[in-house]
Length: 101
Image 1 (cartoon, rainbow, N blue to C red):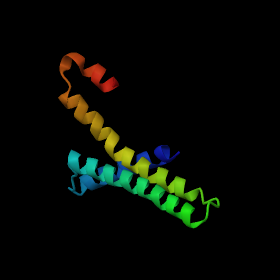
Image 2: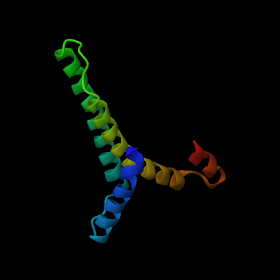
Image 3: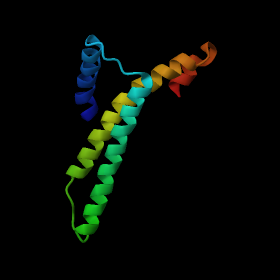
Image 4: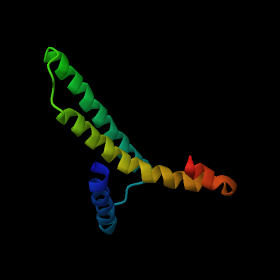
């Protein structure tokens, strides 16, 4: 659900920034995606600490939802850039196989 909702928003943001002459390099977008993914994993460490502090009682599902939200943001930033870079560096003879992998 997050991918379906956030992808058009993210693409609009990239287009908006480009119109304002603000450009992110491929490495910058990759870095942003890795940071979002790191925040997603950090949320799960907070959830596990909350579980320990809660003496094993159930904790909120919001931790998982927030974690998946940030992981999805990271994927939205990394995936298109990764595909673009693979298309550029793949030899012409096996470009389709590389993209499939």
